[in-house]
Each structure stands twice: as structure tokens, then as C-alpha cells.
Image (tube, rainbow, N blue to C red):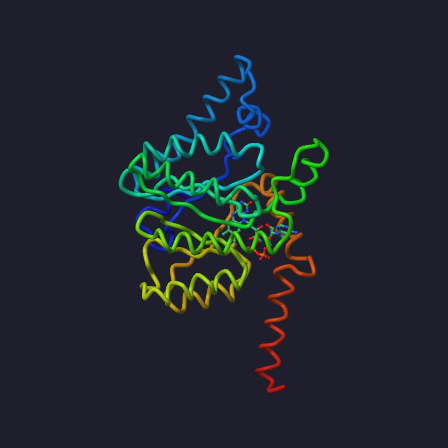
Length: 277
Ligand SMILES: Cc1cc2nc3c(=O)[nH]c(=O)nc-3n(C[C@H](O)[C@H](O)[C@H](O)COP(=O)(O)OP(=O)(O)OC[C@H]3O[C@@H](n4cnc5c(N)ncnc54)[C@H](O)[C@@H]3O)c2cc1C
């Protein structure tokens, strides 16, 4: 996808998951700073080299690369890798971009910390924010293992931090490139409104909206029509490796408060409007 994105202005980013290039249990072990066996050290070296080769390719071809956030207990190794790669490849363009899940109560603090580190290193800081996709697993694991849940107490707390950090980005636009990845209409509207209030061009190069392919086209199309930078996140891979992702989407799409219900209501409303009812 990095090569595909090169010179294709319709594909401004490439993205990957660290679990696509490394074994989950190994990443958890490195995150814990547990002692690795000789075999595991070699295995981790290979993961490191793969991650580096992905970012290097992005750097050589000028394609920014987002790394997805997954479970909190593999995030430490991810953060370390990203900060190291940022120092190497983000000198002129934010090629290496991390993801921050705002359902984590420490997310804003961590994000601001990384922003400061990037400034200290004299490199560009680019990132994406999401609310977070692993809430139930995180809470269940914390309860089972007896540590405090890393997740916000409720949805309003997640929404609050998500929207607050958007304001933080707008206040630091000179040193931050960001992507707001959401299907939430209020957050999308908030960002669009702030762009207008500050008299910024809709296609400001530091600001991107994003939705998943196949979801929330009403948000994507309206933003695109008004000239905002908006991208569809298009996952691909072998079906068996994609199953967890597809299950998460299926769960979101079938829940009563989920995206499909919201979209279905909008479609029904539009059908009624067209029929003049
Ligand atoms: C382009 C794109 C890329 C993405 N990449 C990633 C990624 O790298 N990593 C990742 O984890 N997810 C990723 N996601 C998924 C994302 O984290 C959300 O699961 C999904 O987008 C739903 O959140 P929302 O903001 O769209 O909508 P909303 O419906 O407004 O929010 C739902 C989200 O709110 C949070 N929430 C719900 N109930 C509670 C509660 N009781 N307490 C606290 N929080 C609550 C959860 O995070 C839930 O997913 C991505 C989504 C998009 C659109």
C-alpha cells in the first residue's frame, strides 16, 4: 500500500497493525520488560526490522504511515518503537504516526507527553485519534487480573477527552498534524466548526477526518463535498487474519446504539422526505 500511495493524491496515508508483523504474546512480553529468551530476542529483532523497513519505505517514498492502537498491554513497546522511528524519519514530514485511544483515561496525558518529546527531538508530530475498539476486553482483563481499568468510567468521559483533544490540536496546529478517526457526528461537526471559526482552509494540510470503509458515508461524503480532507480507512488482508476486525465491525453494526442503526434512521428519514411524508 505504501507503493500504491506514492504519487496517488487520493491515498494520502498507509496504515498497519503491529500484530500484523509481530506475535501478540511476544509484544506483550517486551512491553512488560520481561526477560526474553535468546530465541525471543531474535524474534523481536525481526519484528523491529520489519517495523523499521515499513517506516523507511514510507520515508523513501514520502508516504506517511499510521500505526494502529490495539490492546493497552502491548502499547508500551509500540510507543517506544514509534518514538524511536519518529526521531529517525520525521525530520521534515510526519512519516511515523501513532494512534491514541481516547477511551483510555491516560490518553491525553500520554499524547501531550509525546508531543513535547517530538518538539524536544526537533521532529514533526503526526497522529490519529480514535475512541478505542477494545473496551470490553480491557475491562474484563483488568477485573480478572485485579488492576485498575485503563478505560474511562463512561462514554461521556471518553467523548469529553476526544473533543477536548481536538481543541488542543487546533491550538497547536503549527506543530501537530492530526487525523480525527470517528463515526461520531458531534465530534466531526466540532472539528469542522473549529476549522471555520478560525478561518482556516477546509483542506488545511495538517487536518484530516477519517471513517472506516463501508461505514458513515453520510459523514465522509458531506465533508468531502465541502472540501475537507477526509479519507476512508480501507482494511485488507487474508480473510482469516481479518476476522477479529470484521467481528468488531459486526458488533458495532448490530448494536442498537451502533452505527448502522444511526445510518438506517437517516436513510429512512431521507426516504420519507423524498416521498413528501
Ligand atoms: C478511520 C478509523 C480508524 C480506526 N483505527 C482504530 C485503531 O487504530 N485502534 C482502535 O482501537 N480503534 C480504531 N478505530 C475504531 C474506534 O476506536 C471506535 O471503536 C469506533 O470508531 C467507534 O467510535 P466512534 O468515535 O466512531 O463513535 P461513537 O459511537 O461515538 O463511540 C463509540 C466508542 O465510545 C467508547 N465508549 C462506548 N461506551 C463507553 C463507555 N461506557 N465507557 C467509555 N467509553 C465508551 C468506545 O471507544 C466505543 O468504541 C478506528 C476507527 C476509524 C473510523
